[in-house]
Amino acid sequence: MHSLIAALLAIIFAWALPRKNNTVQHGAWVLRAAVIGALFPQLDVAFWLIETQFNIPMPERNSLLHTPFLAPFYAGLIASVITVFFKKSWSQIFLASLIGLLTTSLLSMLTVQGVQVLPFITSYRLGLGIWHTFDFMLLALGALSLALGLVLPIFRRDIARISLLLLCMYFVASLYLQWQARDIAQTYIRALNISVERIYALPQPLSPFNWRLIVIDNNNKLHDTFINLVRQDVLLKDKTASQVYQIQTLYLPIKHAVWRVYDRLGNKNLSKAQQEYAQRAWQYIKISPNKRKLRFSLLEEFTLPPLNHMTNLEVCAQFTDLRFAGLQKQDGGVFLTCNHKNNQGFTLFQQMRASHGGLPPEFKLLKK
Image (cartoon, helix red, strand yellow):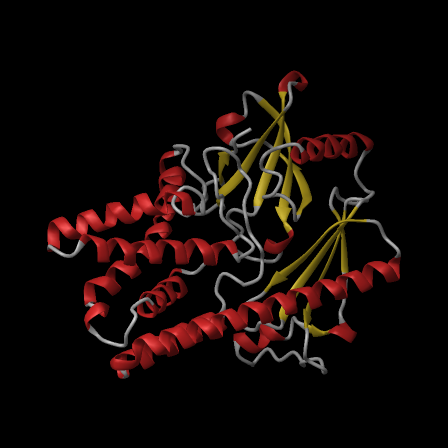
């Protein structure tokens, strides 16, 4: 979840705890601790920077610092530092920090990206895909509640509790909208009479009514569409309009939905050898612990291995995440599945940085 939204909602949770409306228990350091706790898991960006700059294997995003099981330890660390340097109440700072940490963890579990709950035991991620990482409704609710709490400090607790009630109502509404989006996908499946492996209803930015549906069938084809659940008429494209409007034109009314179908392993123009190679590469991906990362990926081309691995590997099958198609910046959405010489299995790489300034793209080796 976006750090700004997590910080705002952490403050609301902290305001909602006291038994009575007063300003004493909402001390500045309590709120600072809640914000620090909410932002602390975002430090895993440093892991990514270290890995890309120094090629040192680091924990994945939304894993080690996001797991709720380590939240008490992190909260104790934050409380101890603040207590030592600023002489504040350890118990109050600990509770506020814990609220911030659990807020970020919980919100991240409700996104598509999810959280690796047990990073030392399993690579499984819990991601319900109910809200987009940057949900404008959550941002508006957090900002409005914060503003009202600052203007009316004597009613902060009540304002916070009402906000949490609205948050719960929005959660239930989002669950219903997700179910409605999935039902549209089910209607499409029944109309074509296709056998399906998985249906994904992905929340989108700007509106809770915008959804992206991706259906993966048993023939390695991906069916993809953008819909708006309430709009009746198609928005006309206008290159002079704002960027927000242009994005909104992508989401069509249900009755005008356009489904695009992609063959995961390329088209029929591939040679027999290339088709066999693509099949073997995908079979390796399906049993790999990284299969979740590549669930929306499509074969794009065959290419050479990364420069620092060319002596050990032969040709690579490049897969690109469908969600990154058409984007200028595809960092993290491009993968290479490379065959070892003498057919000794495959190695999987993920692009960390695209080619720039005449330099080749940079890839990291994914764990087997």
